[in-house]
Image (cartoon, rainbow, N blue to C red; front, side, top):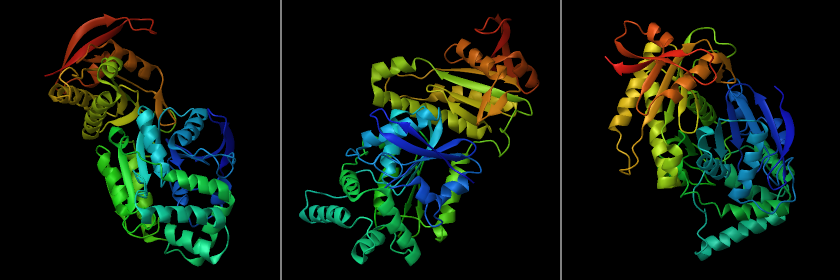
Length: 458
């Protein structure tokens, strides 16, 4: 397997190195601490190897953050906002519209911030070894002294193969590593960044506080943390998981913050991420290349989402959108639907059966009829449109006339209404659904009128 390294430029003019390998739905790693695309590539011990294990089912995207690895080095600003610009530049140059994020260690804060700022683009979020608020309480003398001592040691001993420096960093990040892994870790520190850059980077770690952002995450989230982590205590990860609505927490045994491939917990880590990312997806190969069979496509659209945001504000509107996502995804899971993509205020999904798609649509509308929003004037009304056909499958997405028609049918529906094309009605004949003929409707982009039916419970 080969990686391809390229460069892009951030909004503030920083050159960022990024690399891709594998194929499938995109998974973007937001690395923590330090990274070096070339040096990591040849090392068998470290956690990045888990990405190689996932490359059989995902397009893996890695990048060196500002000041690190192959990216521009002479950098002073390592704030979360600055590091957001690195991530934005990479996903934008690759044209990734929707993808999953893996935030490791310090990179978790950047991943959280991105997921909140761009909820329509983040499909799933995995966080490993993260924390939500400053690790040191600088109002306490003992914490202040320990923090300054760490900065001094970084500045004076960074990357040196000296017993004192190596023992400090190795004991902090991987106390149970063998001699060879410690040696490679020391070398990686040396090649990743200069002592001055490393000290500036570590100092700004203390500014991380995403506790106000975490509750606003709408994407399904998996938080993984080691019970005995000597660098970031377990309770830090548990706090982040508790703040994110619906997040799952997976605890792994062990003390190493840098999870090594030789550890028993490594396989559990890889398997947990693989299963989490593939939830709700068709079996491997089902969407690779042109679709080989008939599928039913469902689109949803939430009425007045922009107006809702303007009326209630970003945070309150985001809470409603999270409820919207949760309701639809639960219905998809119950009716064997596959989420294809999030459209910002709706979801596109596919089904191998027209009757399953129709039952899912009815269940979704029923769930929203029961839903009690946190604000009395914030009722959620959904349009749903269905069509069936043989779309083209590419890069975990569906394309073609069948998809375009389903989207137009959805746009035609009234709030609270389910509309379906005649082909869906015929496929579900005799399955207990009630179809009300609303006539031939002219749809934008289609030459001939299309016969549509309103779907109601029988």
